[in-house]
Length: 513
Image (tube, rainbow, N blue to C red):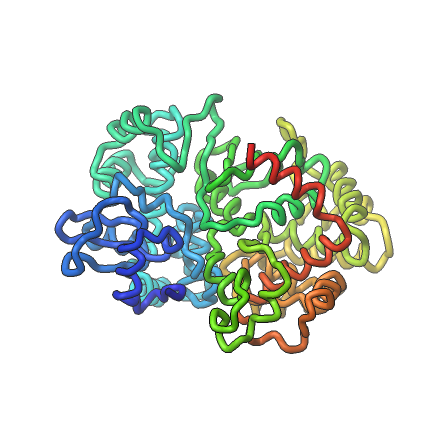
């Protein structure tokens, strides 16, 4: 079955996925069962409902608005997110990315509409038509998920959880939890202690949340291991014994995260200064690791793992199928667009290791100190604009360009958030001095999780293409997954150099312990 669309779900395709309990489609749509009044993920282990009793909805919010409550057996809200929010670039998809980052909790529907450049009325109409629910209902579903995480993974008082999850009152919190999950918050916490859920485990330290972030199999952990470890900046990031640790700014303060790859999930330990930042922090971690991707659909389109012409549409992917590309590769995202742009500009035309040294010097000199295993935050754009020229070294023109980019971000002339379109962001990036096509494409790809950007001017990608026998001047047949093709080619070249061998072997040994 192809990736489902939002406005016209294919009943037969969806029902086939439910009948086979296909976990690949968890989060892509939800099954509403009229006879029980509940909604489930496609892989729910319960008996498959009769055709006449089911309907399929694009979002959990649509199911809740229609009066259905979440299944307490399969926890549909804990499924991986829909990959459509990255594939699609329309208003609905961009709004969903911003809702996941907590924009409505911070600025309400007016803030969301203003960020997207639409009126509240037009935004509500589009979201209701496309997703089955308006912005308030979508945000309510998001708050319910955050509340469940806090109820089940912390000892926070319920009153604190209510406001941390974004509810306006304790009564609204209680009513929503009862409506969505069919139990009171207190009962939910009691049940979670008796039977730990698959997406969270109880923390051993007050203030520390330990979550199990699901993803769709397969996952190429070797690629993410190399990417995180090779780009780790001392003082802000740490890779040690298979665990990635780093600090990051959050809407209400800062956080420290510790991530490790486990079979079937990513273990995430989050130390949050403000619990209101739980949802956006989780969303950013998922974006960083591309956990909401649909690897089976991507690999199938690229012909990975196939050797027969019949299995590859029109024979277009035969070239890829014959070169041993690893299934489940991801396109690493970012935790902050401004940080990504400035670090990318610092690293232009120098090695990854040299770039790390320059960035570490900037972080040490201008980054805000915090307590914890990684003692500094990446400096704000305002600070880099004011003091960057005193710290950065290298060609004067490059230093000037970096400082100017930081000033554009600080002044609001350059806007970097997940609700932008790729074309608009790339245009604005190219308008900056010192930003060429490669930098604009790279930043756009990672900041927006755009799946279809080919880094065809990248030297390493071109080396990988030469080894794989792929013509980079003729790649339209691999749309809309050319970002993933870029990662495969990048990895191919680095493997030939031997750069990936050590970290990949260590990670494979760890995950098979």
